[in-house]
Length: 451
Image 1: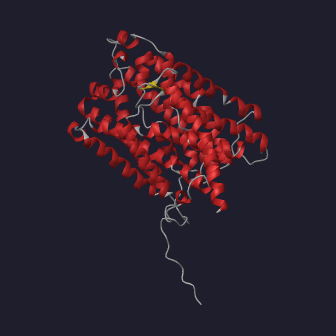
Image 2 (image 1 turned 90 degrees about the horizontal axis):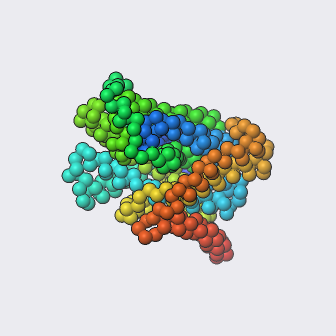
Image 3 (image 1 turned 60 degrees about the vertical axis):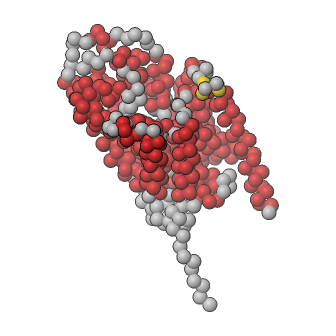
């Protein structure tokens, strides 16, 4: 008797020939996961002046970005698997710590991903304030999330190619702004340019740390990258250089125009664009802010949505999260659920808190550095197309500067609050919840296996 095959489920069968991310789209996706443009640097100028800002933006990557990029280059090329940093920590330190890595990342994403729809709507408001008034702004934020969900279901390659185009569109206005700034040299305002009302070097360093955070996010899609052993180290090198250049060059260009750093604040690029290039350049920079918020959310959804996928494959989440689109290979259930969860967080009105970034994202990065050293000890023969120099000492040493910066950030911002709740207390509560959830998931898995 001939057995007829069941109709193919296009949302559950594994992808046989999904397009993979190549070097340039991976660099573009990394750019949005880490930077999303020079937006957010204005407060560094306000706190330290133009010269101080350039110095901080040049030195911070040496102690923060470069060590992380080196760590990602070795581990992503040695273990180019879907799930990235979860796989590294689980393999190097065991399933308990692998679970904590995912929990810290996803818990941190709640506070991060709720911001980008708000930024998207805020920058849109520069064009037509009436368009974003009241509930219209909320619906626009929801609409952005829906578009990102659909875009991500189209696959990693679609997100990477879109990020390439958005990077060009986003940076175009800053090329014009930098050129105008260099051509608009003013000696009249030199004193204003160099004098500050109040200097806050450590605060500026912390803002620079946030703007250089996220290098490990692309690792979760390593299984969807073309020739990852070669591509990841190159992508990290190019991305570090691209981000440092696109941060420093516009600040240097504007510094030549005699803009008073005391007048800078969040969103100040639009005002500077209006001073140097008129309303048209101000509109273009605001449009870049819209693109930056959208592109960052879209790229981070690509990264974070792979975590429920690998957790489901390891039995810590229901198997439905492991369903993939047959043509694109995208984990469509995980993408939709993550998108809905982040949409719900829009109503919470979270602000980015330093202490939560340090405790959640920072601790997850530290676990990755520990996994780097642990794998050097446990699996010395593991093929490593790229290797952090210095043996086990080098693997340990590169994690020291990021750890020191995170400790300094926590010490400086320990008194941040969400209303009447201490940000530090909330951070520790979320960290403590991780082990509880791990043991609950283990118990549920045993119960299901016994049935």
